[in-house]
Image 1 (cartoon, rainbow, N blue to C red):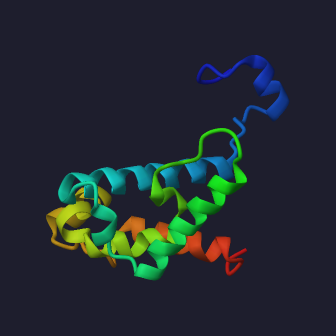
Image 2: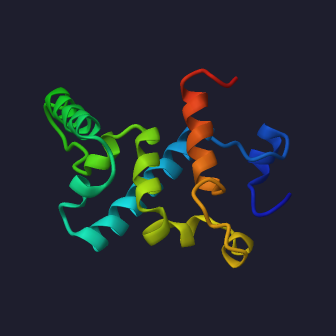
Length: 141
């Protein structure tokens, strides 16, 4: 038995821990949304969304999605954070616009930072967003 995994779990899954990859990706996406919102609200205040770097049309689309969800949810609580209604790919222009000032030091390796290649183009987060976009749009298998 390894790493505190219950014996029954090992028997059921052949020693492997099952992982819901879809949920794991969703968790990463939402953590990134929260980080972006927190960082930009700290830098620009509560109206940060107006300066975030997406087009007015995209911003309006987020509001439409939020409104649709509110109408769909007759009871219960809806997500109030507007960035949760953005497509994951919508995060790319936000990160890119504010990359050097607010995000580069978080999403690059120490080696990239030390040697001055902490550019958006070389970042792992840019690759993650691009791969996610291609995968969710059935461009990749």
